[in-house]
Image 1 (spheres, rainbow, N blue to C red):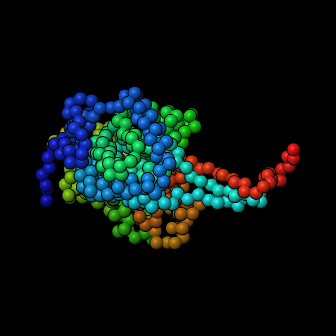
Image 2: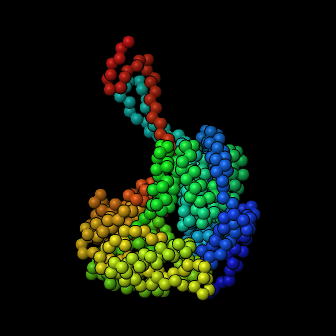
Image 3: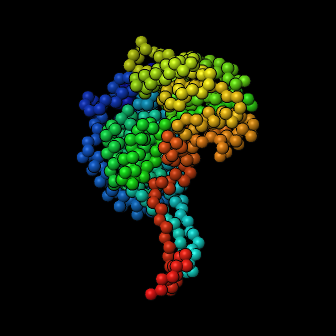
Amino acid sequence: MTQSFPTPAAHARELLAKLGVPALPADAGHPVRSPIDGQVMTHVAFDDAREIGSKVSAACHAFAAWRVVPAPRRGELVRLLGEELRAAKADLAALVTLEAGKIASEAAGEVQEMIDICDFAVGLSRQLHGLTIASERPGHAMRETWHPLGPVAVISAFNFPVAVWAWNACLALVCGDPVIWKPSEKTPLTALATHAVLERALARFEDAPDGLCAVVLGGRDAGERLARDPRIALVSATGSTRMGRAVAPMVAERFGRSILELGGNNAMIVTPSADLSLALRAIVFSAAGTAGQRCTSLRRLIVHESLVDKVADAVETAFQRLPVGDPRQPATLLGPLIDKAAYDAFVEAMNQVRAEGGSVAGGERLLIDELPDAYYVRPALARLPAATACMQRETFAPLLHVAPYADFEEAIAIQNDVPQGLSSCVMTNDVREAEGFLSAAGSDCGIANVNIGPSGAEIGGAFGGEKETGGGRESGSDSWKQYMRRQTATVNYSGALPLAQGVRFDL
Ligand code: UN1
């Protein structure tokens, strides 16, 4: 059943008010468009160099106070944030839909991901464990302690406009670090709304230092300013490999730390023993879900030659049937691309497939008459006779390449033969293939799955990838260690001064 909704602009006004965001200038500053209709929802003011500088100074002051607050007490702030996010979940998710174009269920999932990482970080606040290490010297004790690191800058992308901030901010806050957030200029409203939610948690917490958390709005130059600022201890940047190539040297030049989560070019291998109905559902969700705009979206399908036509036909049919449209409609499974540039890149990538001897099914632009400034597309399936150059590139759109393989080792070689190394998976019921895929000689990616697609990771694991993906790890496992500095301490409780390695230096 089709529901009627207000225009995205009116809907955004209503949600921003409900979420507690102070009124924004209606017609001045940087325009914020909704991909749902391509129209301007509102404007936001970008921070200038002076404002960015003073936010960093405030974060440095806040750090001096926050680092000595006991970690479990810091965890209480994140616990309160989790409560406030639970209360705001529906409204914040609706705003994610307006600003990023995600279908309602995926937007709700994104806010759930924020809540999950809050819970994880609260537990972590009592588990920032160090080590005790055996000393070779008598009467000596050695230990390793983790201390807060300093202000953290989070540079996030449009496609996960709030969850990626939460991955970083929740860990940083329990680790004792202030957080400055520069969201994508395409999604500033969800950042402002998240901050309004955070303000409520800070008010309930009562004694958090001023300047502990800030939002910096701006374009590339604002991100650059944060990357170059020596007062920022860690820059956690999510986005394209191109962005990472620019940001990483700026941080490295001043010996800052960075966590990079850049491009992916994720593959699935489908073997003869695979459960094909399971595979089909995994393929369609991970290739077409979020309109192919996840870092983890499936872009390459490597299918055994005996099955490749059957699998490709089934995917093509499923793509044809996917309901595309306003992501607020409950029946929609595929919302719009973020903007015209994304659409142009999609068209160019399909042209490259054809130029390399492949064929493309789907890929048409839809709803042009109704919504001429929005970019809705039918997902595209590109059939290739073999893995070719067009499969090397990440195109942030629902374009799935399919190519055959003859033996399993060849499939793994194709899977690994791209510059990126984020996520990967194999569909198989053969334990040798499954374990081989996960072995040292198997997938070279940061994420490797068996019998699930490459996207939709849980927060409990470390998230990130190798090669051009940047090597960073965020979210679960021991990713928290990057937000702290490690100190090795040796205490001499004897009356003598023996030297390590048996060195003698008698005065
Ligand atoms: C991203 O696309 O930047 O694994 C993050 C997933 C999500 C996170 C994606 N949990 O697909």
